[in-house]
Length: 253
Image (cartoon, rainbow, N blue to C red; front, side):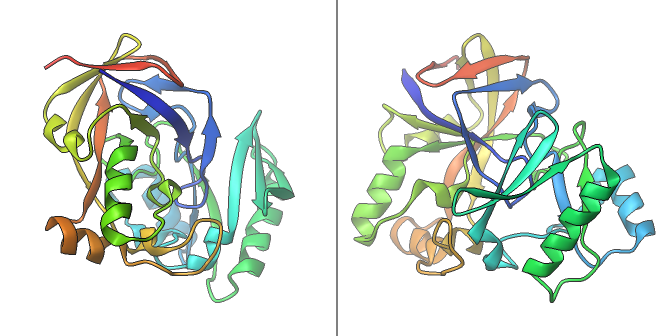
């Protein structure tokens, strides 16, 4: 048995990371409000409408992402009561009512100021088919903090857990034992989760948290030390419920 140490969700795809005490899990969707929003880049209205109606056709290149635009890592979003707050250095610089088209337009213009080389930025919302990289699978990411610590020891460098933007961070499990959980079922607070696969890491993890500085080579280093580029596992929820900090995690088989 092991425990939840920290919980996070990302209301805006690739551009947010919010710490919370609990998460609402929804079967066939994932985490409530997680990756419900995304900013498109360089797309016309026809293409935007097509992607809204055809979620399986969404590609990361269609959206603003840290992988292609590290500067965005200097910013964050939180989402409360229908309001998206754009933040820098933990200070709100713009609040947007997501039901107000004029305020959404102001937000998109602000994003345009931040990254002027990108054109036609638009904000999309989809709570039924969130903007997960794993579509059609609607998954939740789990990270073992002891695996990060083991990686740090081998690398002899600080590796911040925030680089991996996981939803569930756990302790109490030996380093890398989460890899043995693939195809097993976990139970957290009476919610069952199928462990679907490991999480391969991309160059976005090379960016130092809360900055645009690239100071590590995470995928290359993982490959060097472990002969793979994975860190973390994907979970698919099988029923609804609430998970909280310090909840026990059981292996059901």
